[in-house]
Image 1: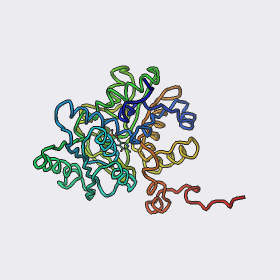
Image 2 (image 1 turned 90 degrees about the horizontal axis):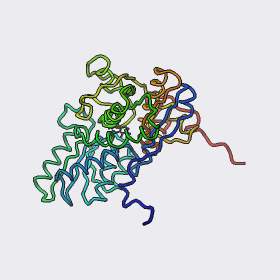
Image 3 (image 1 turned 45 degrees about the vertical axis):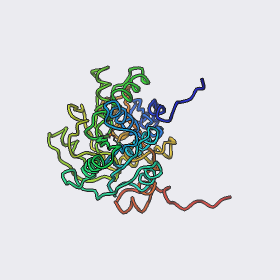
Image 4 (image 1 turned 90 degrees about the vertical axis):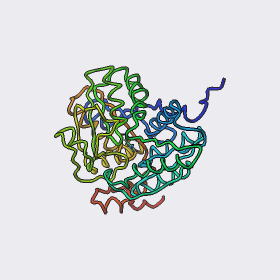
Length: 341
Ligand code: PMP
């Protein structure tokens, strides 16, 4: 038998853990990033997409030729489109207009049909999640092949992907020497799922939330009120409610990370460590540094490198976009090139 995967879906997960040199040196800890940007759909959300579809198949909720409908900031949709093309489904994605063009284009190329909607809060019936749910109901009523609403925020198959995959992988890759885990939450599947897996194996492990500005979770876990302040240019993270994937989960620590801090880390990792990452990875590594400082030298802290820089070239790596938002623009970004010799 050749040493080959039977299909691309079997290449989801089993991502490497990468030591982050500068963060480790500055804190005296081992700070390790789980390279989720190496999944086939280039993000951590492939795991959730695959488990959600597997679960739906096992429960008879989806039929060949049926349509998977989802409301997503993009990455879950890319994962679902990938799974759908291998397993014989169609994909209809509802995405807020504010998300990056790169993600929208990737979705189209992956075969998804896109519906762009204004970015309005969850309480508004025209929020992307509600639009997706209604579209799934309408298609289910009209198309004999049916439709399935993936419901990543409240479908706990999402969290299970990390209870069964990401968490045990981190445990095995660190040989059980993991003192802290930290990441941001969009649906909360990664954070709550990895927390559940690690706490089951090591009750003393410290779990932290790394929250962007504009998210209500930090206030919720520190003051008991779901209150959001400020805003962030990061995509796919931050949350205004306790989703089903976060239900029953509480972090030991919580950090609120400004965009400027996260972006400084993204730029540093790109220029000094060869890691091209998106904004949420910057929020995560910033949280890992804060958690390492809270634990003190000699500890091992793991975080998630969710997706790659290419998905945000027109935003995070666009000097005009950064300057407009009052964010620091690194000197090398957009600087005129030196003449060739
Ligand atoms: N980073 C990025 C880039 C994402 O797209 C997402 C998913 N929305 C997350 C982080 C957060 O992952 P989760 O949904 O598991 O909380």
